[in-house]
Image (tube, rainbow, N blue to C red):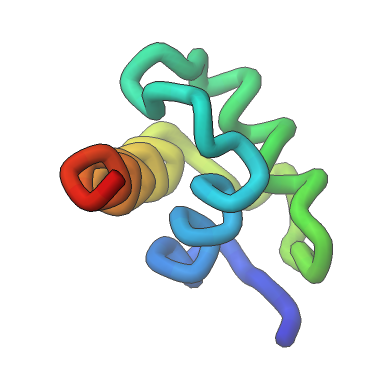
Length: 72
């Protein structure tokens, strides 16, 4: 499945898998952008992101991360 910028939840889950030790709130948007574009299956135009998209991804990732912390 190809990932696009609007696949916020799927991207969040993939980021959690790729960086389980990272608190999403400590990630700079420049790094978040790079990590998203480096995900396997990401096919969208890297230039099509914006602060709102990155913030939505970060918040979805945070929810997944917090759930993992509570369960682990």
